[in-house]
Image (tube, rainbow, N blue to C red; front, side, top):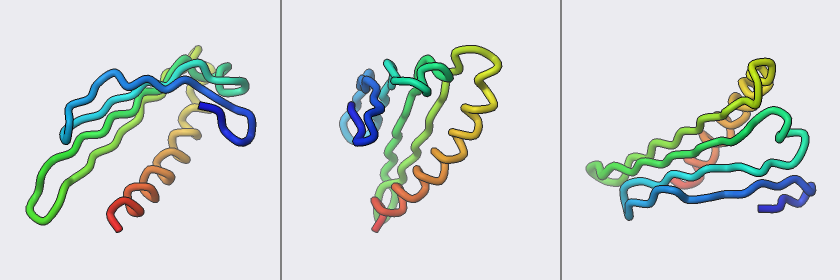
Length: 92
């Protein structure tokens, strides 16, 4: 994956259960993220509910070293907002 700002990473789907689950691993980050994280994982779980589908989406961020954890915590706050916006868009 190459972003318009020049940053990039590798995305690998490591679990796929059609209509139920998707799990991905993100690695190979370009700097500066490569200095903070070894990898991220993202998991989607879909559950049938009356009138639609409930979606649970979660991330785990893995620090390169303990000193990187506060920076990853700040990044996780941005992820939470972005995930909430994205799920709202999907729901519409």
